[in-house]
Amino acid sequence: MQINAGELVRAAARQRTALAGVLPSVNGSALASFSLLQPPPGADPSTAALFGAAPYQTLTLVAQLSVIDLRTWNAIAAANDAERATRLSVDDARRLLLLNLAQALMSVVTAERLAELSRAGLADSIERLTLAERANRAGASTELDLGRLRQDAEQARAAVVTADETLRQSRESLGLALGLEEPVAVSPSFQLDGLATQLLAKGSGCSALDGLDKRADQLAASARVEVAHRGVLDAKAQFIPSVGVRSTASAFVLPG
Image (tube, rainbow, N blue to C red; front, side, top):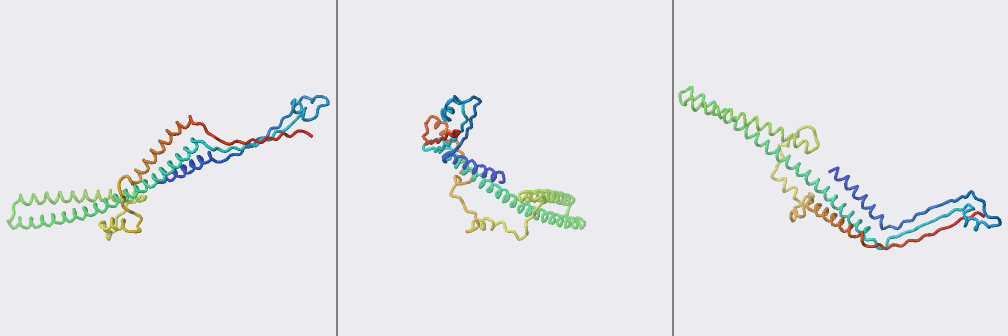
């Protein structure tokens, strides 16, 4: 998202650069000429300068304004489309960032619930095994029943280990999604069911889209297509002449 924000600044700069093509420009130049030759005898300074035998200075001022220049206006439109595409890319990066955070949050909540269920299942398996051992000592059950319950208890312990590892990985992913280096857990009072309702509530900043074509990445892709079309138009505009206004003022300074 920070990279896209930097690209947005660059796109805005390119837009201002393209706008400079239609703004009036004024350029000035100065030229000083000196000759090692002597002026003709009896010649005035103007005649001597005309033959290059006297020093003189030239001041030139050129003002130019483009009136009809299809390439320049097309470049401005392409820069606007590129800036809009970059702005939409920033929105899409924000959307993906929030999506990643929401997925990490749901993974942690799911992993915590599975860990609780696995521990409850292990407790039930141990309790059934204890009762079976008592019944076996009393002669009310067989070794086959006792072995099956022991196997169930071992499977429940393995499920607890797997659930704890999954929970640890989910918390680490949530921490990375938040930009932290340590695992992050979810508060026990957190309610996942009401999250979507709260996000879609009025004033929360989130709203449902009318369709997939209104999503930020879809709009950014459409804007980049427009930029490509502008490039084709720029190639065609090279064959179209441009019209501009140019004014030049020059002053010759001769020695007195």
